[in-house]
Length: 230
Image (cartoon, rainbow, N blue to C red; front, side):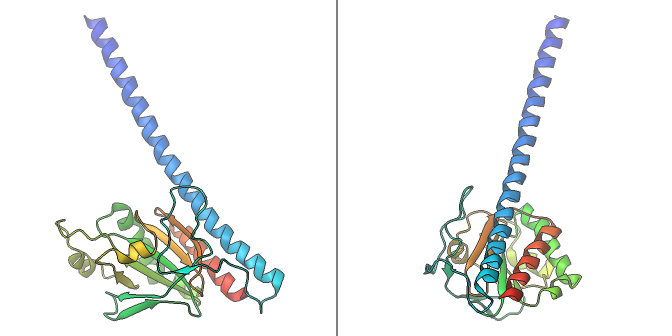
């Protein structure tokens, strides 16, 4: 009986170990997917720069002529059909300033972070963004705007959005998407999500998942370089 019990215990331990390995591999696959998506974003911006350099700074690079009020959903993998589309201007209330904020074709590119206050990954990402503001790191990119969108609010949860915002006091625009219309407009179904727009509101890239500080800075750096070359 003792040997039988020991055998059962060893089988259970092996099964638990296999499940742990599988879970870790799934997590690593998710990280790899985010890295690939971020690489595609930087690749698109680099291609835009190459187009500008090849055609001359006075000529705009060729992009898809598609415009619209909403982007298709961010894909789980593969090409993103929204890249090259131009998003029409949209306006929402900014909790930080207390005024309306419009994301529109202008002289600046935009890095848009879409998040939900109950999302644990968003709760990790937002302080990273705040640290860039606190350290004045984003001052190095005068032609790139940081915008955030708070969405997927669930009034049945015990932690209301208003109390969360009052407690955190983020020092960057927080557009309130109370009806999830902005999430739909940006094609966002999961958070955190990032949408990268050039000065004309043309989509350069989109991806979901939290990224570290250096990769956030990398996106700003590429966008500023694109603006400088333009």
